[in-house]
Length: 174
Image 1: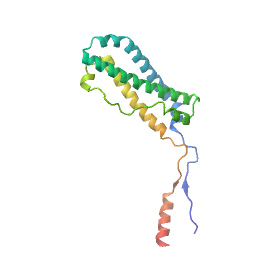
Image 2: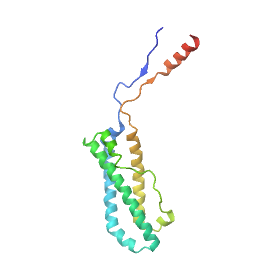
Image 3: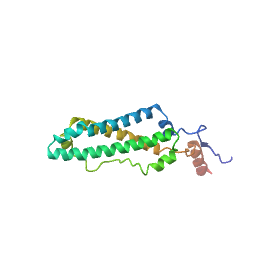
Image 4: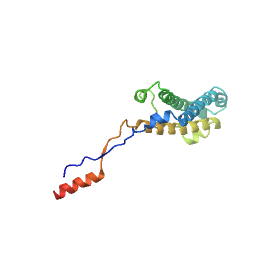
């Protein structure tokens, strides 16, 4: 009996999450949510936030300044990532070109030197809400970015488990 060559292969091309996601309605909603949050934050920091920060005690004002900078940085990363993904959905960039852009658009995974929750609790509620919204959105985008980055252009063929067992029996019993 000859050697069997049985491999499992998908007959249809593999669906790539990145390509399908950026073309989906879900991505459009995420894009609008992210850009709206950027606009709301800018309006807050330039208007009511500026007024509220003047009323804070010195230590709280320092926390306000550092947390608003972290918030702005986080939102700029989010906006950059969203814009790159939109360029992919509109055909302006390929997924491989978007991956190259990733070296310029760095999504940080953990923030260092975050203010203690006690200090953040002294910040205006509006700023606290924006920080919370941005962190939740950032976590979702990090998850999506990992899914998109893990896309494989073609699946690796795998050996049939039956064939592997058959081969082991053949070796064992000659």
